[in-house]
Length: 341
Image (cartoon, rainbow, N blue to C red; front, side, top):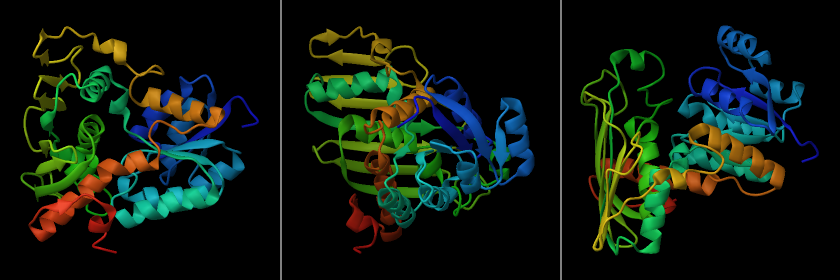
């Protein structure tokens, strides 16, 4: 990069767009200069609050404001179209999770970025937290022995008002696994390793929406461990994301929001671990990922969640959806997810 400070824009000015904007404003090597949203009123309000230029067309924003990088924070099912169009401008892109909601759309956007030589990165901000990072290290170091069981629980509550917009639709949201549970699924595979096959059940148990609000799935990891994914937005009260890893020589349980681990014990006894020592060095959550993305662009290195990493949890979800359609176990690989194509 010729400049030391990147000119940054945000596409999608509601919800996560405001979070990304705050993260950019807290990043020394980037300056927020523009925003774009299809809703002119939302774009104007966002821009006025931050003294930046506003646009309705993200491509016009990038070209007119001469941007180096953007965050895409629009509804799930719009990501591929927006990212593909932006790639042609040469701007580097940090895309909110999920990259998109079908394998074909994800392929299209990643191939466009590769073709145009632009950097594409995904968001999985729970990877910045000390608890999951410590758990991943403990598994990799063999402190738990051979992993036998590993589970993630995402038991959340969403009121009916949450689903009054695009949430809950099949074409923009995609359902519980793609919107709410994807962070937990990513942590599970990031900590334990690649998932080899999955058998899933998806259901709309409570809300009046098109997409499923509840999911239960059994998984088999490539390393031989077994596990469960349990997720819902239909329960009350909401519980924190919980990851449990049980091995032949130890167990770790982490709950998001806890300062420490719910449990960390090995055959040598309880382990008193300071999880904050494992926090991502550039900061927690979205702030840390935006800073890493900016640093990666300036240093010419890969960001912490490149497309291949952002795709891993999605492949598990796509296989889960295929499992529901076929009523059987499905291998988690691209050939199976795309129906053998």
